[in-house]
Length: 291
Length: 211
Image (cartoon, rainbow over all chains, first blue to last red; front, side, top):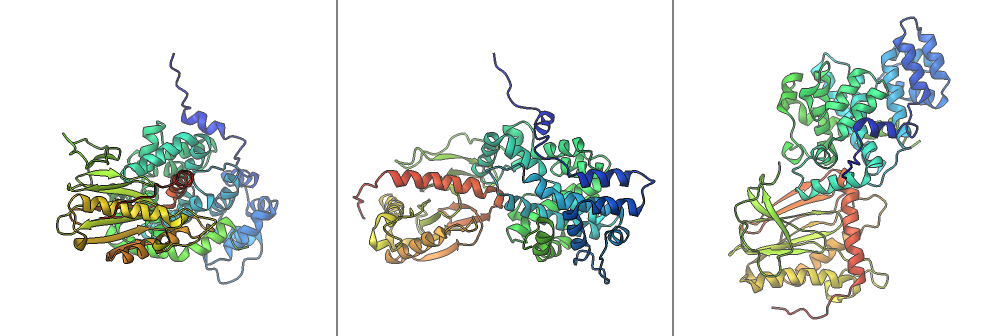
């Protein structure tokens, strides 16, 4: 009898339950933000319960990311000037790397993994500003999390994941990693990340951006944001391998340009270059480097 | 995306039957896939490609007849010698000499003329931070070897922190170098480490017939 030992996406994501968990501060902030009766003070109190998040929040609020003139020295001031929905993004962004340190793997170093994610976050934020009609800070978080399913696949299915990576190299980089994963495993890291976002009840925008960044035409309510993350992912690769030639990286779905109203002629060089310029500071802020 | 096999793949030169070859749509050519430690010589209009971390590949061809090939090697780190000078033929350079001599000799044996040879070198990256820069020794060795042999390096892309994909077309001499994202760094390092452990185990046979 032949038994299919391959897990489903849902089983795979269930398997990491307990290994990676959303930080309590995020869950609490999320509940408060969803509740219309919450006040800025309620949210500030919840933040203050987590000293390490408090420090990070104040550091980000005072960084060049916001460019406020006066210094932001209390959490309530930070919450009122940054805004409650952005506090939620920040809680998720600043906690995610330490959360996923609990899911190690031998296929990619965490440093290399987060480097690509930070490039993508910066590019997505920049593209959102250029495209308009969406929230740049939310896009930052979406970019940071877009490949999160990869860490689950690499940890839970290391043999298959390695086979997929070798398939990409043997194809002379013509087969993309998500296509190789579909071929070897039956699903890809975008689908796995999307399922994690669903189980974690992350905002629907994040879930769609993560799940469909390689398949933008499947996105439903957030096609604009998903298309921006799709483009940002490719520009992040350009920033990483230090090129301005589109032919050096995976192709951008032309539909992404139509959806966003952006034009490849105008945005690529400036986005890649600004992303490279902002990288060092973002790495410090979100990975706690150089403290 | 999937490779479409052509109706027939021309036979390789004798001795290269084990090299994996297939049709590559984007290059519209048959392409030979080189792994660490392998080399390939061809007189057909086909591509040769490999992925490089700190290993190095020399691409050598007769620019008149178009026969040429590629190798893929690295110098083992030897406790007894850190030398990269080709003339030393120490334990650490023997594998480099072996890889270079086999490539050049097979080109000459199949009709290439020494005075027509041109060389390009790629790889030698430092793709894992904090690792000893073994890539640098491989680059220095390849340059020194080619200089000693009187072969001019017409193009190179070496060092730096990126893994690379190198695609070489001996007939035209064209090369496409693509920097690979760091997602592939560990996989490439593991392939190269595995290759290093195999050359560490078996000695290279001493005699190489020079043309």
